[in-house]
Image (cartoon, rainbow, N blue to C red; front, side):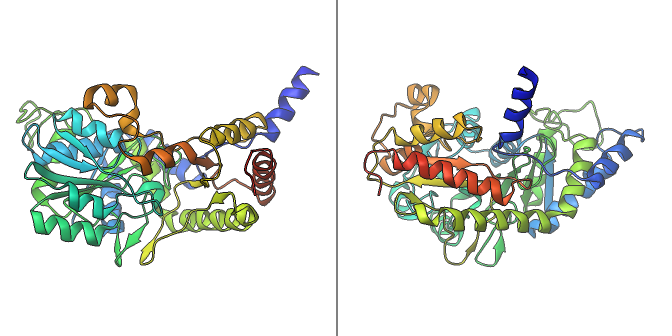
Length: 387
C-alpha cells in the first residue's frame, strides 16, 4: 500500500526542470568512452567551433560552468582592483560573485519592471569616473538592451560583459546574444536551453581575450609547455564527455528552442484568464527571447507574502516551482560585505518578492500545464484582493 502511494505521488509530480536527452547524445558520449581521450579532444574543438558559429563570433572557449565563463572574462579584462562594475541586483548570485573574486566593486542599479533587465536610464545615471565596465544579464532569456548599452559603453569607454547564461539562441538588433560587448558567458546546467551536465562557454571576437581565457581555464598555462604557468589560473576545463553531449545538443538546438516556445505559448493561453492577478512574461520589441524558464509575477494588489503562499500551494500538490530570483544585494554575505539595505533597489525587491518560476521542460504535457493553471487559479482565488 505504501509503495502504491509513493508510485502515485511520483506519477503526479511535475518537476520544475528536466534535460532532453536522446539516443544521439548517448551515442556521442559513448563514442568518447570508447576512445582514449577523455579531456581536450576533438569534441571540445567541435563544440567550441559550433558555439562560435551559433553566436556569430570569431572565438569560443568552453569551460566547466557558466560561472567559470563569467569569471574568466572578468579576470581576462584585468581591471584595476576596486573599480566599479555596473550590474543588476536581479540575477543568480554568480553574476556578482565573479566581480568580488577579482576585488571589483559591484555597482548595482535598479531594473526595468517590464523586462526585469537593467534599466538603461538608471545605468546612465550610475556612471562615474570609477566605472570600468557594465555587466548585464539577459534575465530568463530576455535580451538586455544591448544596442543602448553598447552606445553607452562607447560613449564612456566602458567594457561590456554579457551574462548570457540563460539566453542561448536569443537575439536583439538582428544580432545573437553572444556577439555583444567584449565577451559573453553561457551556462549549460541541465535546466538550460542545452546542457552539458555542467559546463559553460565564452564567446568573443577578441583574440587576445580568448587566448587569456584559454590560459585561465588551464591553470594559467600558455603555449605548448605544460609546466609553464604565465598567470594565476584555474581548473576550469570542460571534459570531452561533456563536450560530446554539448555537440549533440547543439545539433538539436532549433528543435529545443521551438519546443520551449510552444510551452511558453501554451502557458500564455492557459494563464491569460488569470492575467488580472498575474503579470505574464512578454518579449521586448526588436528582441527575440530564448525561453529559459517561464516566470509569472503577482500584481501589486496582493500582499508581499502572497507569492510564497502560491509556491507552497503548488509544491504541496507536487508541482515544482521556485522563487526566481532573490535580490542579490539582500543575500546575507553580500548585504554584510557591500552595506546594502532593504529599499535600496525597490523595483528589484518588489519583483524578487513576487516572481514564481513554473515547470518548464520538454516533457511537459498540455494536461500538466492545465493542472498548473488550475492550481494557480485555486490559490489566487483564496488570496485577499484577488480579482
